Length: 301
Image 1 (cartoon, rainbow, N blue to C red):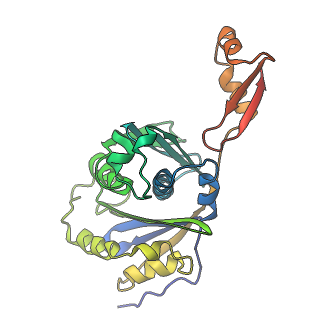
Image 2: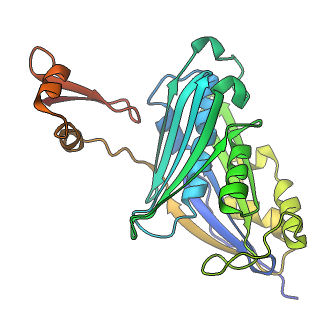
Image 3: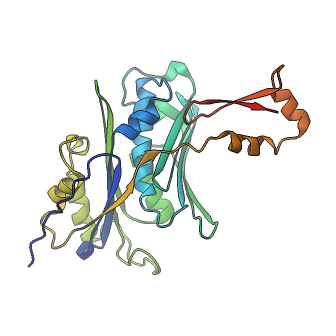
């Protein structure tokens, strides 16, 4: 049996690393966010609990976005709440560009601890995950209730119910004096191949999947956020006893906000003149702020 060797490349921050375990019919994505995360979170002064939730959502969005195949494809994660500390959380990923923001709800529901439950954060709510495919113009969306201890669990439920793909998700967030780091791993079992074949034998008790899930689930919180541990070394730690591990560096991540005056001009042009007049101030200026990057735009009507 050949002995697998770890790759010599070093992926640490703000880049997706894809991997496959051919003999186990499994694939995965692992990521660790650093400077990009600080940039996105720094656009607003969020309470600790909301910042923690958005950090988790961003690492989930980047891993699911890493499953996209073609340029222009987009993944959007949207969590809608009612009666909790968060009314709306939105993140999206397209061509390596990552962005996200939170709309606060009932401030009295915001707890001091960073890692709050989904119930206290969202009250009653749902998670919607949308894949927009650029080449065909098609949109695929799945919706699951916001139940359980974390967004990661809700994402696992999405893949089980909407995609019918056994999926394990683990995330970790660390805040310190230097900023925020969030890491995650997403592993899936695809026994009938990644595409083009009906998955007739997908089941959670498949022996190959049980093996991979046990190994993947052994990952520790500190490993996901350790800046000294490369993502390649992390995958090697988990699966070094496998016959073959294939790793493939994915997209390099950046904060990508698509707000421009031209974009807002185009949006405002869709409104009737009388409605635009009502939006404008006494100088005929319509002021627009971007929820993602917190920039203000002054547009002459």
